[in-house]
Image (cartoon, rainbow, N blue to C red; front, side, top):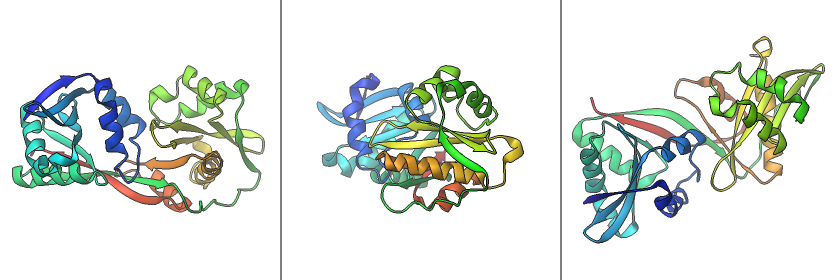
Length: 268
């Protein structure tokens, strides 16, 4: 098995075919950003192209083999990991063949496999919207409200810094994917819609000012924004770190389906 270095753009079609086989047919915003900066390889057996791999300096981020080579998947993944000197494999449980091969490698090499966070989704079905708290409303924010929205989003350290810059938030407002939560006329929360690359999925990044947290307002905000996205023919996706209970509670309260888990497999 040979690894042929290529550019990220050279494997776009292979990645799209892989995504179409996932239960939740999208990679997260953070994963896509990391993948674009990773090393890309075509997998080859002699002159035959058998699949592709994406890897950082230390971790295998994506792995796929073509249908006719699936019988060699375990050996191909093992050869990829060893050839690149990797010490970690990241995979999703809805990524069938890659997940099976990664777990087989972990068992054989005595690597540690642990869940790294759930993936929730809603493509069809009924959203369970919470009742509106008294004196509260959610509406799209206008260009003149971007600065106030930026201040609130900046208070939530869990939101990626690239998404909360002034230009990024202004763009979100222009594209009508920036919403505000008002209570008694005061802006106390903001939600940012983050469109993903495939199949109309959108993630939501909510932020509520500290004085109004733990009162159900974040769930109400995400519920109203989710309804607006569904009406716009978008699909919903929500992910969380394994110990981050807030996003998990919101997703479950709104009726999103637990569709898969991230796994992190590491050398001991």
